[in-house]
Picture 1 (cartoon, rainbow, N blue to C red):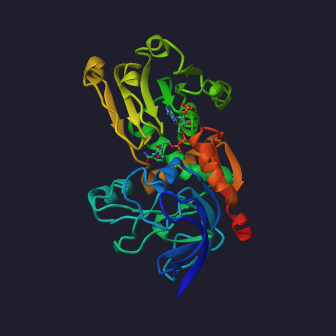
Picture 2: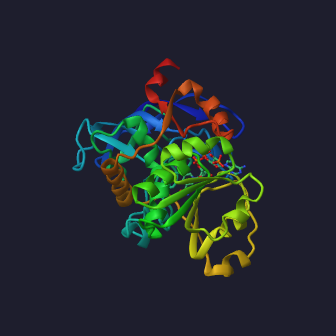
Picture 3: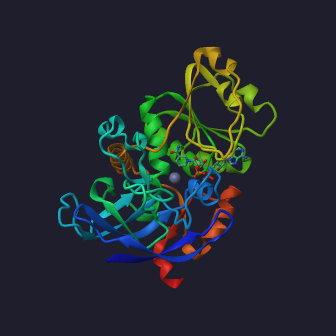
Length: 351
Ligand code: NAP
Ligand code: ZN
């Protein structure tokens, strides 16, 4: 027996998304079934459905910013009850035995995490399908609790955009009063601004879109720099202790490294489709560090959700019916979103 599930899928890297029905497994003893209410639209969904990151698995049902309600429980499930409001992020399983998994950093699982879509379950052969669908079946250990009182659609983007920015901000020890900057005011970038401000850091947005100034300040940023303006980079040299770069397209990292003070750190979370050259002198000068980071582990994701609930932080979203998802892809590529599209999964019924 399987669970027939409606969703939206891309059939190949050049095809638009459209309605598609597929089978999910019957819940095993440790699985829960989550009826999905909303799913965020991450730029990674676009990269992957379009094959930007190399070989991909089709048909592909994207979506890894999933929120919903537990509707069925496997016989051995202890952590969850029917009706619990939960989230599922970028991965649905991992080996559970390697050093990374044992450290609670499943996103760096040595044999490899099972990504929520465009991946395989830990058996290595069963493809995974994501949250642009009515339900998902997940092992209970890979499910997050959405704190009560949080708006569900506005919480969805926390499952990827939230944790991807929270994790490096914490890992690299950003503290209250630090001079920080966020490059790229998109879905990830706007979460970074909110989280840095919640931690008491001074935060500047570095954006190539001058039209975003007002919204950056409204989000709480202390300053806004239009990086497309002549002289912008010279003017802000050696200003920041910490920079988080959430840009989706290839760009010159060296220009931004120049903005770091001595011993400053720049963390890349954006994953452009092609590499950018780097001049070693940008790092040797002022003993700067360039690092990268991928999402966060289950424990840290729960910590982030609880932190956000405590501080009243959620995403700024535009809700769309699933029928508008292809248009939302194009609008995201044009930078025409404030700041995350979230799909109302109930609209699947109209497809
Ligand atoms: P997004 O909402 O589309 O935002 C990307 C931002 O990048 C844009 O808002 C824009 O900001 C900037 N940008 C776009 N094109 C640019 C260009 N040609 N030159 C300079 N800046 C440009 O995307 P997102 O969902 O936040 O994702 C951002 C990136 O992070 C993607 O590559 C995604 O795959 C990756 N990602 C990584 C992880 C991880 O674990 N590391 C997790 C999720 C996503 P301005 O207009 O302000 O300049
Ligand atoms: Zn994502």
